[in-house]
Amino acid sequence: MRSTLINKRRVVPAGALALACACLSVVLAHAEPEKKTDQKPAPKKLTGAELYAINCNRCHPERYATEFTSAQWKTIMTHMRVRANLPAAQAKEILKFLQEDAGN
Amino acid sequence: MKISSLTLGATAAACVLGVVLTPRVAAMISDEDFNALKSMVTNQDQRIGQLEKLHEQDQQTHQQDQQTIQQLQQRLGETQTLATNAAQKAEAAAKIQPVYPIPSGTMSALHNFTMAGDAEVQFGRSEGSHSGFVLADFAPIFLFRANDNVLFEAGFDVTLQNSAVSLQNNSQTGNGDAQTAVSLSFAQLDYLYNDYVTLVAGYMVLPLGTYSERAAGWLNKIPDDPLAVDFLPGAGVGAQFRGSLPVGDSGQMVTYSVYGANGPSSVDGSGRATTLDPDGHTIPNISLNGNVGVNADGSSGNLNGNPSGGGRIGWFYPWKPHYDIELGVSGQAGPWDSGGHELWSAAVVDAAMHIGPYAEVKGEYINTWQQTTDAGTLRARGWWIQGAYKLAGLNLDAPVVNDLELVSRYDGVNDGLGTTTDRVTAGIVYYLTNTLLLEGDYEWLHSRGPAALPSNEFVVQLSYGF
Image 1 (cartoon, rainbow over the protein chains, first blue to last red):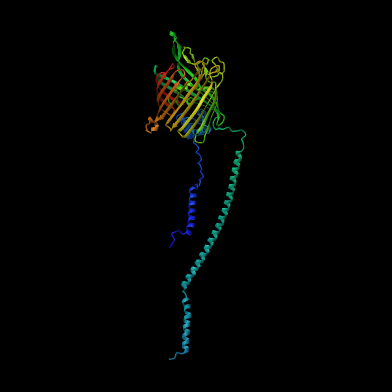
Image 2 (cartoon, rainbow over the protein chains, first blue to last red; image 1 turned 90 degrees about the vertical axis):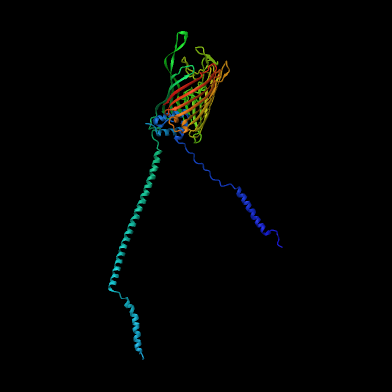
């Protein structure tokens, strides 16, 4: 009469294999994904036009670049840098933006 | 019949000879064919000779090309050497210091004089008065730039008012001819020490809140100033350090101002809360802007015991152009009476926000404390909040509408001497140009106390900024 028991010779290696697969699946499930090197894009430097919109339009309507000469803009921007407490670098960029289209 | 062997042999020989001789006979060609073959061979010889000559020529050409390539390579090497030498020379030349330092901006003059400012004409009426035109203000600003780091700036207010004329009956005062009043609103020397520090000295615009520093006829969307601003000195004689510290590259910044000034002074020198004017009317005994260091009798000196000190720190954050918020805290403290015993101090919180290019809201809360010898500590205080919206934001594509801006302000004050005032202002601004504004507003006032203001008034103002 054939035994109804499972052939032990086949159970042990099969069980070991199953256990190994189970362990491997657990390990894989908890494995951290490969970290991608986060490279933050370099911050975009604000242009003179953007700085003008950010700072100048807060207090007064837009002054057109052609309203003053290049030298006058330099004087006016010095006044505005003091009055509005503008950072030096931003004031220089705004001045450059205005002087590009300054009047004669 | 017998065939003889001799016949057989001869026949066989004849067969053999026939077999042997047949190819010889087949190999024989005609003269024509031979000549044709000969001609063909001759032609082939000629062609071979021509090809050999062409080959020789090709070989010569190839040799010449090789020589040319070698020459070009040699020249390329020489050119690269020259370029390297030139770059080295240029680098060396840049390191050579000129005998005299060349100042920056040599293409434009160091000095420059520019005038800016604004002018306002009003038509208005307040309750109890007749309506009329007023030259509200002519406010030139003179800017003299000495060089990249030095600026002298001064602002004036030129106004017209009727002169007072004493009348014979009942000693009343009448109105005489027009007279021009010129007052100095500020005169300061600015020295930009470095990117972060600017020294200011003179009759300075004081950084108490932001309204005083950013106010001008063509900048204010409502002709009248907020009521509470009157509790602060707009300018003072002293010295100040101010500057800005950028935070990151988004436009965010922290601003600071630290100053010392003469401070407020007592009208009659005492520490009492009120005093009497020549007409016997009770007036506040403090002058916020009157302590300029030179007295009416010509003597110099501070009118109170010690100078006052103050400052403002602000934070500005834009998350993109036209979208930003600013918060600030400022204050000042110092003695105000001539004895130097009674303290006057102020604290201001200011805020402003822009929500797109069309909408803004801003305001201040102002609180002052004035110690007195007879009325305890007086607290003159107030606040204002103002909102504005440009109708261009509605995208109606209507030319007049796009140049209109609606503005409204709600302010309230308590002068600390028993008078309180609440005011609602509704106004509209029409931008004729970017700096020519036609403003109109109506003010509903509810004022109670000994110094109560008229109830309502309307003002129409034409303001030009230049």
